[in-house]
Image (cartoon, rainbow, N blue to C red; front, top):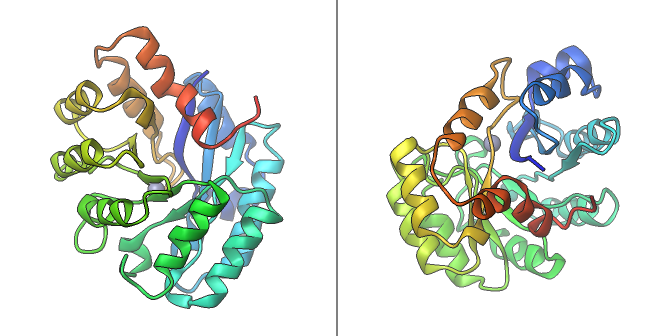
Length: 250
Ligand SMILES: [Zn+2]
């Protein structure tokens, strides 16, 4: 079972296909990807309609024959309405996590409703997936800081530090038992170090597929495939951990 835990219903895909993922899924088929966690793309932009974008992600997943599962997005700087929207996403839309992108969305992890969002994710037992690896709002240390302050909530570094900050991601992953990572960003040496040194139950695989037309699955699948690891560890990273963390019924 291969699960891609970091994909987006890209603006270009949405504009061309609405909520029909059939062409999108053909790319997954080419690479043997069974399921994907789908996040919004348009919803990360500040002028977007939060509710509408979450509904679109839900509807796209509903049309995928069980191959896509949805993650919510809200804008923390909108205050109270973002908390209510997140509750709606979990309670009414059965979304399996909250994706936040402090860099594109332009908010600080110390903003006013962030603490409450962290508490809510803990109470719902759904993970918070952060874009990470880019200053000034998306440093692994800032997400790690939240993980230290909210030990009952699962935090996920969506890019494991990306290219420059994977060492910082590594040190926080070692330090925080409630901090997880998606291997989607570091180069070969960075990924190898993380796979070697971090608890195998805390790592997942992802591609960021969908942001545009390019096939990022090809590169990221090729990369993880050449990183040496025991088969049982690979099975966890490529799918089993995601089943547990996102509470998937398969
Ligand atoms: Zn992303």
